Length: 447
View 1 (cartoon, rainbow, N blue to C red):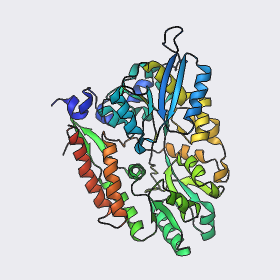
View 2: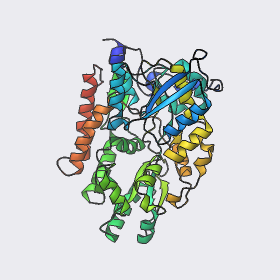
View 3: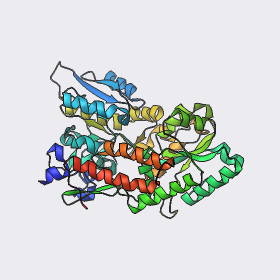
View 4: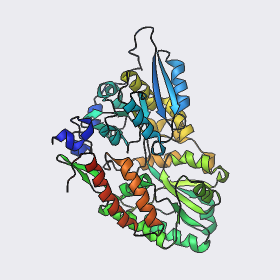
């Protein structure tokens, strides 16, 4: 079995999906010498406008397509709102690729991009993307570049912070915790002050949120060793995080509830949970989902394990990928690059979707320093701008995350709800299932 099969299997391409160190050579190093990005241009024949179909779900995307269309008559973008990826969007995209009627462009989370590559669902856009890459932070190009070939255009990232109810903290004399030890102490103090209020609501099926916590602690779930994948979903850092949350659950200091549920939003609306530790894009989600609590929230840095080394986790970031079979990949890339780098377009995405820019000069966009009434007119994006400087680039996703996600949700929910085992034990089960999912794809896994 050759290297192309052991690393990627179904694609049959000589590409290694891994961290930069494993692939050899940093994608960002190529982009540093790239020329300035040219104005978007169409390769369509004269008098024959190109239509680019684009599927996604991020707030603000439909308006962005309209803005592009108004100024680019030769390349028109037809945007279709889909279900978020893990809620059916990805299955729909992959089914469309297999049926030969996929859109040219699709929003695909960085955590899922390797899975699409394994399925042979992506076009190599290296040549078309190269002129734009100098505009992006190098680490973000690592998330879309595998084996020196690029398969997507970065859009946003998800550095984490702590959203907290300032009024509840003030009422009970709770100081904003800077470390996870202080966070646990605050949880105990808060529960004693008001038995009806918890420090947070823990959603056990949220693998991606937990991955952000694990990444912060130094976890490295996937990598490459020679011709084989390494899977370490129950490494020391991950077990440390699992044991921490298990402790809070056992002491009944946190509520356990499914994420994105009516019950969770009611919990926060009613002031039953005082913090939410999550990604920057939750800024807008909370504004929309618990609008009745406007003005009561603030944002602080994510608690850290070591105050002298304030590492931060990252959750999310959804590149736009060109799907297999796209007839106009250059035009698709031109639009995708415009979306991510045009100051006016992305400034609007910050406002409407809470998206966090990944361009070199993204921090200077006006809405990055805008005050948000929901957070007491705090300039919350400045907190996340600082956090983004401490996001570790060493965390990597594997090629079968949808399958792993399903197993994770079941195992973690069982442990968190007291139906058997602990979160750390669940991670051991998830580790075994992750290895099995890669082998099921015909991929080689290192011991």
